[in-house]
Each structure stands twice: as structure tokens, then as C-alpha cells.
Length: 131
Image (cartoon, rainbow, N blue to C red; front, side, top):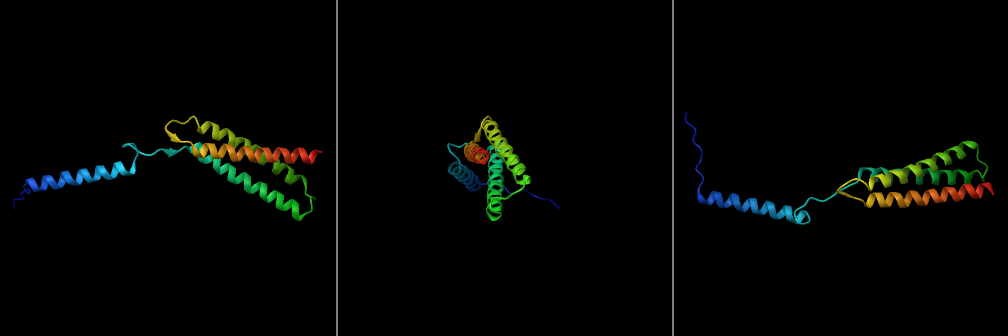
């Protein structure tokens, strides 16, 4: 049994060229000037995740203190100090994420801003508690 290859005609070549042009056109639409879109900075994503965790912990501590009418034990204080450290680490991760090359830095900026706001709130809360 002899297997023959199908001969390529001029019409087949034109169809293949048109298909390649269409593929290239779709790629150019999806990208900016033919370059692939930037991915988010990995450390920036972690910084935003730390901000979410810090926000949830801060909210839970405030709710717990509200329901106990301000009479909370030392465990909540240590949790507050841990939250303070997490917010500082989130800022540090955001700054480190800004040094990654060829990335989208919006997550770094959001993480730094939100963690900074939480850090400021926690510091003010501790200073208010000491007075």
C-alpha cells in the first residue's frame, strides 16, 4: 500500500497564509504593540494578601472588644502586636515587589497603601490605649 502526500496547491498556500495573518492580527489585538501584557508582581500579590489578613484580624479584634465592652485579655493584645508585625511585613513585601522587573506594579502600590493605613491605625490604637 502506497501512501501519497496530498499536493499543496496555490489555493492551499493562500488559505494557510490567510490563516497565519488572521492569527497574527488576533495576537496584535490582544497585546499592546505586539508585546505580551505584564503579569502582576508576585510579592505585590502577597502584600495585598497580607493586607486582607491584617484587615480581617483587625476587624475581628474590634468586634471582639466591642462585644466584651472593652474587657479583653492579654491574648488580644498579643494578636494586635502580631497584626502590627504582619502589616509591616506587608509593606516590606510591597517595596520588594517594586524591584521586580517587567511586572505590573499596581498590586505593590495597593499593598503598600493599605498595609500602611492599617499600620497607622494600629499604632494610633495602641497609643490611644496607653493614654
